[in-house]
Length: 301
Image (cartoon, rainbow, N blue to C red; front, side, top):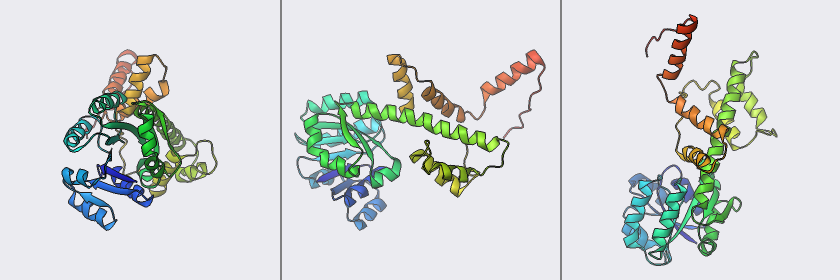
């Protein structure tokens, strides 16, 4: 089958190569000259002009968007719409909010354009070799494109999980869970690092990878990082929050479900970006005032 892909970033590019390897006819749109040249060497057709890209696709077209959530998705769809025809399908494989996906499904449906929302997991390695694909949308549209999803997932982790919005809703919660799991691994390793025994954490994680209950992809990438740099000296402990855990916590509050682990993991990421540590300074000041406890002077940066 044929698949058009827009967005040759850290996920879109390996996804295109994955599809090529799995027997899909991949056509891409990117304005990056070097990426177009590289893709050509890899046997993937690429076009810098959107008009040429859509014209090169057989009808009904299937176009996968791998662009940042929010305005970038809407802007891309707006540019595509004059070039599409009834029966074409837009697939959003990024991390969009599920309500945006439901809105886009309705708006595009009114113009006889199909829409599927696809939560894509597995990182860059999954995009390249076999991603986990959580899909929402109309059953008939999914059925027509199922060979594409089976191919990109390596024949394993893909399914239509519900109506429009379901794919991105499930991916949102998935990422919230991921935050909690990552935080737990990090905290456990920090306890080991500061504990009373002379442990080599790269060896610990290498052992945990083999048959332990906590083994898995997150531990694998942790072990790989520690194997390269056991002390992680070159990395600052500033962790970005991409947005989906925010949405997960908001959803938990909205529907009245307790999610303290995910919320704490999210707040820990917020705190990691606070270079001034004002809350901690306030606590130190309070202890000094009411108990005469000593404080550590700020030496500046």
